[in-house]
Length: 160
View 1 (cartoon, rainbow, N blue to C red):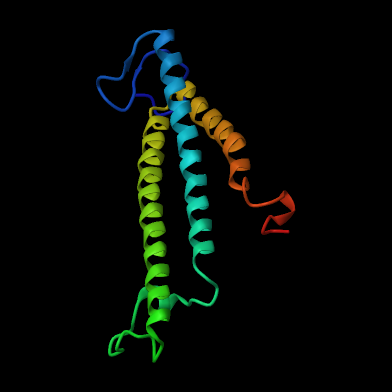
View 2 (tube, rainbow, N blue to C red; view 1 turned 180 degrees about the vertical axis):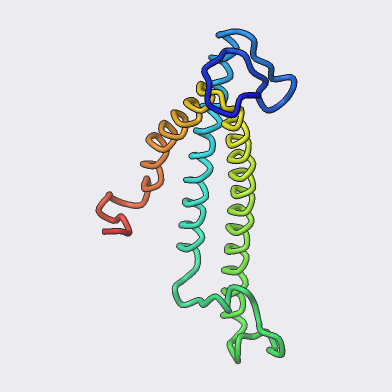
């Protein structure tokens, strides 16, 4: 097995059944890997959008302690609040938990796709490596502007 990058149209990629023996197979394999790289970028931006929605769903008046629930020894009413405040708190906790579960699932997908891409690059085939790089660039170029879609003009970017 080669331990330096090489250009070839013959390799076994990730699994024994993914065996490439001709240029057409290599082109199709590079295309699949390119699409996997685009998927990685889509999931990465999707996680950022879910995080933004989670932060917007929680009113600024709620602290982290409020989201995590009542403290030990507390009677659960938040220190003497009425039942209306308790209902709002439960609704906010429910929304926050849903966003947290969604972000966790997206993170798992991102990790699986990322490690799959890493293993593909570790085949040391230069064509596969170029497919990963090109897919990452295309995915970032296409998907990153969607992060700000629906949040006003570019002038509302948090860095500005």
